[in-house]
Length: 491
Ligand code: F6P
Image 1 (cartoon, rainbow, N blue to C red):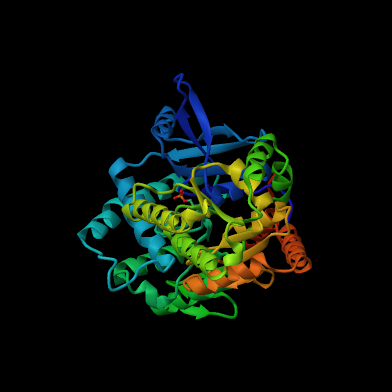
Image 2 (image 1 turned 90 degrees about the vertical axis):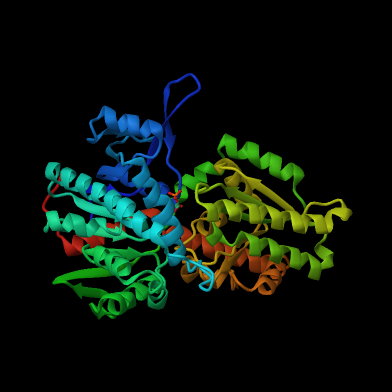
């Protein structure tokens, strides 16, 4: 349906964050991550108020300047939206982000525990839940209710695992609110949820079922959620219809894989910063380039990827001296010990592989830890093989972005546990992310695939990515909203 919608986007991370330049002036920094990139384009076409956490010191200053209320901000394309930054108590925010959301919920939802060894859900988690996760969710709920008082007919569009408690808290105060919640990460099977104490796993599922719609990227995560609603809550589930009835409310569960904006990448491909980075890559490139682009997140499976690449070189001596694995890794969540330890493990593994081949005067793994998007796009154009071997991944945008701009008939090696596999699997070389030998052989198969076959796969991947773009994903979200809450006429 055409026309503008009034939307309250609610996500932990905002589209911008504020900082200070060396000269002491306020600077506006682009928010990071897939979610923010995806939602930014909503702002141009709809009347958006974005509610996010004040994350930097300067964010807190900006929030205070506006008395905690929303204010107008201008997007890069000139469209105006309203931003409301919620300044939480710093300790509460730390417990919410660095104890509950990331090391607990993110780990659980990506099956990241070896259960004999972890997790230890000690008093720290319980404390962090009730003194961090709950109050931060309450603050978000309060901000949503305040915004609904301004714009009663706005639909609430919540995002991700930071905000599982907020929908129920909003519903208690605004029974008629129209709410949809998109989960950008996997939903694990019910048994894995039993790691979380019963009252906490019930709170997660009950919180989500206060929404009118809960959305996922894949049928697989949707199926797991429906099943978990039955197993965790005993809710009434209709798998065929994709609905759950619990506590007298009906929630529709949908699956729409997010897309990217092809026009953005068509333009980026020739942007001066990208061309500059590309020159550096082509000047030093070997005959074959294997690429990975990730955040430094343990779910991305970088260590096994390095091991597989080393094994590939052990098994296929003909590749030695001719191929480099370029790993462009964006540092992420470094206040969490599991993340900083994983970063160290990646560095150790890269070193171990490089040392093994050192005598041959060649460095097989080029590991770069930096946030450099122009460099990533330049490398997207230059890879022969793109390695996406995540342990589990909600979707994985790199597997859609990179093929779109690639100039070398590059082949995608893709984990069967990445959400994008549901769409792109037929054109990729599929890998089991735990099978190091299988990944080594997959890298070799991709590097030696005949060019016509590589080209066919790349072209079909591209056609899919172009026709299932970001605009289609947004249209699907709004169509779902229209189905549960037909709109009264809006300007
Ligand atoms: O959905 C997962 C996600 O929230 C993505 O939006 C983003 O890529 C990543 O995680 C960012 O994480 P954080 O906000 O913790 O840096």
